[in-house]
Length: 194
Image (cartoon, rainbow, N blue to C red; front, top):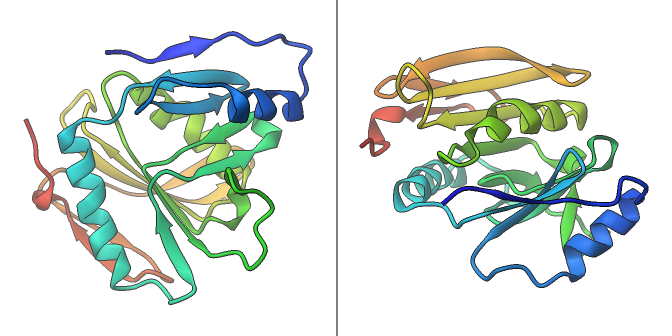
């Protein structure tokens, strides 16, 4: 199953778009995001996708501070890029007084992790990193199960404008290190492959 996009009136404001996203009844179990001003509905991630995210999450819990959390289904807002994105994992301090129950400002995130699905790998490779960099999220980890040369893990950092610098890229089976404040090595050989 592939992603579906819902066209919007180009004259709508960001607030109108968010209100529509929050109030519409979307298909149960689907992942609904606003990507570059377009509402995108994707099917629930596959089993392998979830196993990879869960293994990364388990490792991250051992290194994050007590007042941080790892969120799996929390939307992060990047209004300047017309984005309401739902990464597979968001690592962020828990705000004392959240602005919204439906999303978190992306600038609060310390790390976002995306695991590609066949239907929306392009968003994870192009649109989302541009939004995450624009928001100033320090680290973006892309686990690309559908990379043309075989599965890869790429760590991006040092955001400038809407671009990240590649800090490290490895094929599945190799180690990838997350720098401080994480100081964590992830063994991609633990990830299931087809």
